[in-house]
Image 1 (cartoon, rainbow, N blue to C red):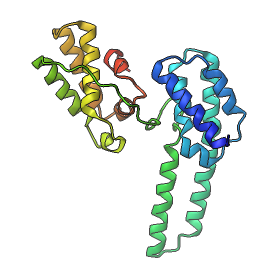
Image 2: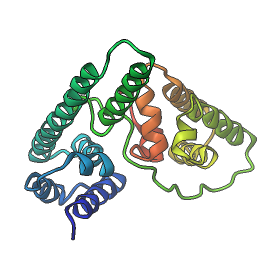
Image 3: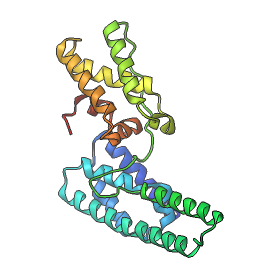
Image 4: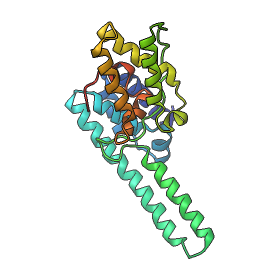
Length: 230
């Protein structure tokens, strides 16, 4: 199996662990990655750095966290080196003329895309790896619950992330509302308070990564429904 395919296989396994909230076996997969010579192309196309960071955040195993941080740091150096070469080439090709301006813009675009492959720091993830397919939520005829779902849809559609990711916001909102309802078993004040809190969290312009992680499935509907303030 080619190295690229092997890295992609490991990334998918790590994503599954995060989705199932069970990181048993993650250490062995991280060790496999450590022993691989990672190319810039493989790092960018598989976005394995995002998978490793997601496992690092979820795992309680100190050894997993330490190795994940080390991998992210190592890969970031690889990306920084590539960005440095792009910047150097940009300076060399930038005499004052209109054609050079368009080249500069192209170089900056490439540099920006590379910085999205792994987190800028081990504790600050950018846009998550890939969209998870969400199961259909139970239909409800309760007017309060349906209104709650509409408000959650609006919160999830803050900005344009949902368009780029291509997620079904109505179904995802229904999943989140269902989890909140199952916790309280009614639409009482506790239910409404939790709902308002989640809508506020998802709309928060100071923390757009939370909404993106929910849209991509790196944060499950159950977790966003029940999580405490972060």
